[in-house]
Length: 238
DNA sequence: AACCGACCCAACCGCAAAAAA
DNA sequence: CTTTTTTGCGGTTGGGTCGGT
Image (cartoon, rainbow, N blue to C red; front, side, top):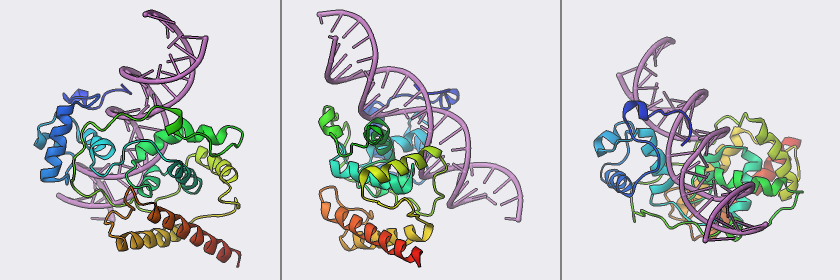
């Protein structure tokens, strides 16, 4: 699938992962960690490139991944975060416990984007209502290495034009951000995310995110985020 | 029951940033 | 300081699945 091969030319396997490969990868990471993705497949005895192993782990095998349908709250959060961040999926994912950037990206492109585009009619049926439940997780390790820290907030803003377009659309449709003039700079994220990490640490969450079952921390994040955004807006008017 | 189009999502690629030498 | 290596990110693809006809 996909484009021209990159691993195949080196004699490495491509395509869907087998259960055996998954088990091998999980076992190796649980035992040795993943300090060196490039060397990992060789050490683990996998005929995959490091990139492929990393992707499989991050998007599917990681023990803290929350599988299943996105709740309407999560979808709303994605929409609002995308309004502010554009296509910075990893940053958005960092704020959604247990969700991966790839998954969020898929959800956005498959139905959230369409939802916003369809006559400004927000909060329609969720993916859970529209489609059947997801397949159960093939391999679900009970514990493993800690997830990577939240992505750096000071990445440059998205350069893609479509993110700008969707931003304007989302602002109108969600109704949560009433001013299109609202701008976010690096200092905003430094302060806001630091604040969030602090509160998460207080709640005993070393990943800097709430536990999947805890909506309080998520709500707390949004409350803080909106408060902070409001503060910055008023400051910018001075 | 079979066919077909639409949708979903896992996995790929290229590129840029970060880290190491 | 420069070059090389490694990691991480975002965009994209296409096989598999589902629902409608």
